[in-house]
Length: 222
Length: 221
Image 1 (cartoon, each protein chain N blue to C red):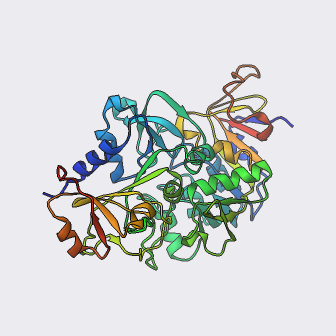
Image 2 (image 1 turned 180 degrees about the horizontal axis):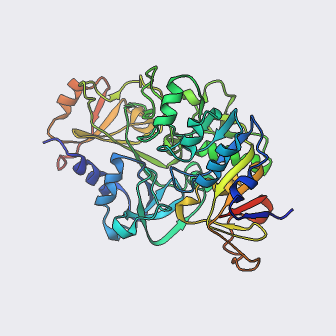
Image 3 (image 1 turned 90 degrees about the vertical axis):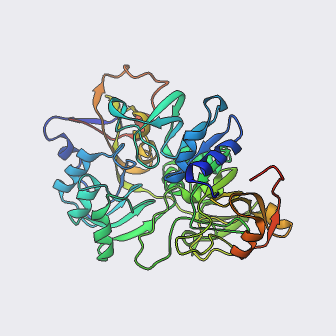
């Protein structure tokens, strides 16, 4: 199925109308670069709760992911780097015991989603072996080096911010705002991509497409 | 005289081979970039998906879509390339990155690194890309002060802080000396002291609880 385009005043809300309570939501972005702020705001209005959020950080300032956390909709955060200068919303909720946290090394976080999108059952990875983050995981020595067994992270929904999409759902990104977007777009049941603009089929250079349309369910443009 | 942060950064820059692909992490190690000479052909990798990262952006050059691993706005150099996170970390784990420079709470004589978590009960753990860099880069350089604020050495027999990676550090650049650590250096009985600054190997032996091999050259330090 090619992607459905959502445009107009209620586009973001329409694209997220069916997110269920308890869903695992993959949220793109590295800090604010590539953060799908408008989609997150729509998710807050939509009201789904008890969410597991998978994202590199755990919110900056009071907007985007931080606002979702502040609204009390998130049960668990899976991320690599929650603690930042401006992560006061997360810090407060975590210290009050109102948020579960799973810290995952950044590359392992990306690769676990890549594995989900690529149909890999699990993989042995040297990152984190012999550390707190490797504790309790199956290990194996491969070529003289200790590895830990890592399992895929699959989302029910992925919220991705990109630059331009065509009407079929092919997507290109902009600079380092690409970050987790292309990987998350492969790893969720429903992939929602917000873009700055949508162009007719044929207008994107096929050699430049980063996320092919097969991965994209919904394209949202304001 | 002991070395300033900038002098340590300059020493690290001088030891990075021309043409290397290098990751400077976040915080203090990013100072190394200021000391890389334009002709060196060193290509900077930033974990959030870019090669040939340029200096920090100012004024009209600031673009919210172009930041480094510390989320600071940066610029792109000719020959830059963008890629997604799984590719960025495949570059590390796959052995394609020549050098990374990291800060540390502690480094052990055997090259274990502790730099992500103090282990304190109320600390919020945050690892970022530190573990991936530590085990992935072909050579890992640490930039740190030799002593913590309370005067205890940060180059130790065994790390007491939670580990980032096992036997992954090659060199430790500090205000007082440069050391070679890890399995190769440790095999001949301890940590090799490559150069000293404002101190001698005998003084370092007093300070540190690890066996030191004097490998300073007469011309050095």
